[in-house]
Image (cartoon, rainbow, N blue to C red; front, top):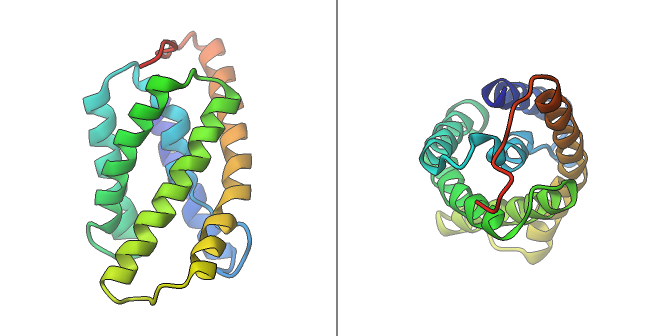
Length: 166
């Protein structure tokens, strides 16, 4: 179930990114959101989750952003943060989306500062805040929908997740 939902999120994000202009207020980061929501279904297997995040970041680099290793490294840092976040939070729709918001902010900060370091863009606080805020609404909605879908699927197919603090 986890990998099918990751593939679905990746395809959905690539479709949305082609349809929605970059100046929109609904920039998708569905792939990242799905990693945040689906971590408990890795059943505490942190190594498998980190490897999955590495592969997802690499695919994100190659297919969606045409860069190399920027998102791979970002996704690795974020995977560790997700693991740490769930060690303090229970798996609920509220806490998962709080973690999702924090992950989106961290991802945007890492990406923005990296692009500033390589002089691709110049630092602008307003642009940074706009990039963060434009990602939040659609990804919170997607996080809620994905959380509900995973709960329904896990009940139907009796799939257990690691519900204890991980």
